[in-house]
Length: 117
Image (tube, rainbow, N blue to C red; front, side, top):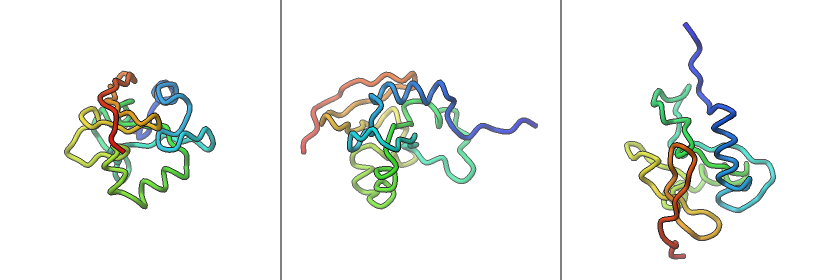
């Protein structure tokens, strides 16, 4: 039996990195970047086909990735994390430019509204 892939492909990682401008979607840093799953994969990875698609992934720095775990209320409110059963394509994400975006599985992002701060 073939081993199930639990992380995004290099192609998807590149799409997400390019969509996010090569910077953390929370603080704008370009250092120590990683890919963050908005809906957690769970232990060993989730079985949903969309879990490793671009609309569930964000470019974040390692500092902000830890911040999301330490500040879940704020992370969910900004769309950096998404609670099940919500789907990542249905939850807007706050970017450092102050705008809310809807992310598509193909890697596109569409501006929704200016966020109230």
